[in-house]
Amino acid sequence: MLAKRVIACLDVKDGRVVKGIQFLQLRDAGDPAELAAAYNREGVDEVVFLDITASSENRGLMVETVVRTARQVFIPLAVGGGIRSITDARSILTSGADKVSVNTAAVEKPELITELSEEFGSQAVVLAIDARRDGLDSNAWRVYTYGGRQSTNINAIEWAIEGEAFGAGEILLTSMDRDGTQNGFDCELTRAISRAVKIPVIASGGAGNAEHFAQVLTEGEADAALAASIFHYGSVRVADLKSHLKARGIPVRL
Amino acid sequence: MITVIDYGAGNLRSVENALRYLETPFQVTSQASDVAQASAILLPGVGHFGQMIRSLDVLGLVPVLRQALNRGLPYLGICLGMHALYERSEEAPSWPGLGLLRGTIRRFEPGLKVPHMGWNQLRIAPGSRLFQNIAAGPFVYFAHSYYLPTEEIPSSNEKNFHAAALADYGVPFVAAVEKSNIYGVQFHPEKSGELGLQMLRNFVEVSRKPSSRMPA
Image (cartoon, rainbow over all chains, first blue to last red; front, side, top):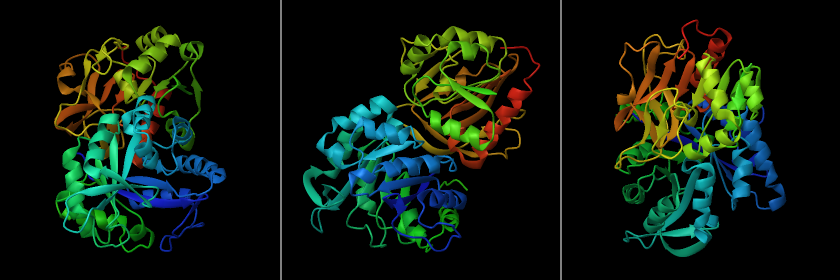
């Protein structure tokens, strides 16, 4: 039976991890490669590097980071942030990453998804969607771009369906309403998207404890769940989280 | 020495990284002459069946691979590299595969989420050489939309054949095959953590001491 995945996300700026990590004995707690290796040892199923480097001249640092990571971490690695072309994607994928995620560039030019998928296979193309609920009692979610700074007129569910048709192999769905709150994932949003498409959906935004993962993987019908800070700060350990999921009857890789 | 075939696609770097990590001597090549002299072959793969076969064809590798495998050379095909062993794939019906094993690669049924992506559990057949020193029920990493149906497994009395492992995704499917020195895995051992590295180690061992059984 296909296991539900637990994914750790690292925000990387200028080749360094933005949020530090204190609880694992690391030589260099700011090195993404070393952190990815530590998460691998803890039993995480996949690692995502989100490049938040602002200046284009430092973008090459991500390639170098991916090269070093892929030499020592033998689980899937996805990289997002700043990927706008086939050339960008190729440099990341030939460095040893397995997937690239696209967000703003795909909204502005959806054909990019098709081009990437035809070039590298749909399994290598993740469509990242940042969505925010349109008003408190609304069941519509709006797509945002540029790291959540720019609103669009696009409905998140419709965009997910389109993204699949354009060739995305997976959707990384972030609830902007929940992101950073640690109040739990947006199960309603995740379920709505998961039911609308026939590709795997990764839920992101709002993880605060192990039960939040259980909820989004059952009620939310997500195929995978992603978190960043709770893993970095050690408030939830991957091994404990997986034991909790298993006890809840959710298939996980142990 | 493992000869890794570079046909211009796939996740070559990940396979190289894994072999380097295991300190296994290997070369990466797209030259037919290198492949003809190889002592063991690894064909990695992600991407599109038709593109792979076309690339192998352009490089003149199709007849070379057929000959090498018929001679009993150890071979490991990963994902598309396993599909390449078969007669054809629904992914590109007009491009015939190497046809060293009988069968057709199918697309997963509508209704399932495709690609089948993530960690799934294997049911390992007894006696498999590839899964030596691997405990029962390992989780390995898959990323594929096409698969070999279990109906394509020849009856158990066919010489030297093993369906080395099965997995389930809506239907049971073949996750690994072994026939003489030919090995194919649908999953990605190079992305399956420590267990995957052990499987690659096992193939390296096999390639040092090829089976004395008759070639395929």
